[in-house]
Length: 275
Image (cartoon, rainbow, N blue to C red; front, top):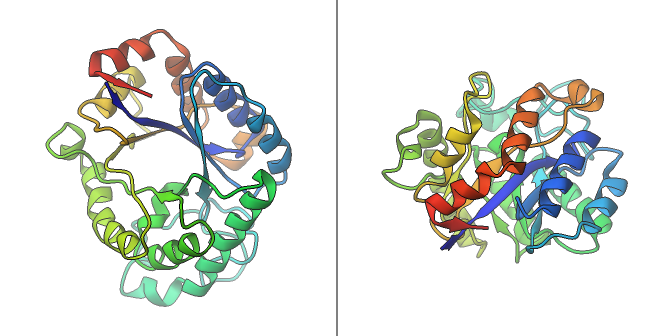
């Protein structure tokens, strides 16, 4: 059996999301979760997470948040008015090279990632096991260098998430996965120069506007995944806080239902992987 990392993103985004992730951890259906540190509920959610008793060890990482329209801990990395984080960065004409290099402030990116790392360390009493990025922004030109510099300074033993799919699997031929894989190539080279480890493979990205059967998607995500590979998911319970902060709501409930069902361990068994 190959051991993989099944990671629930967005812990502390909303109480319902955090509660759902804790339920899955306690049931042994996840072995990692990525924590957002920019919200006022963080300390309570961190205490609850540290109290979880799981049948398997699980990792806790930082979900570095540079998008979403939220208030940053220090300053927005965008050279813009308003002071809030931009709603999105990937594939935006104003943020992609060559204009992106002028409109993304690398010093502020590094300062914000460091502030979020420091918040994590303050609340959890240790550095994160790994660091990834909300909406995959850690991979972007203009973001990846200051992101990796911040991690190397404050959490040098953490691994960082790259998002390249396994070659010649169904995910490899998916356009979104291939695009993330292309962005991951320079990211991995830069991480290696800073002596930061990366996961060997990644899956879990799909079109949330056309979700389909998550069970079928999950089987595709884990097919051929090597040991140490990361599968991303976004389970949780939709509540009013989540609806005010994010557009991904009902699909979190569908992911939670599948991961808590008996179909989930069967899928792992059929793919010959374990957490």
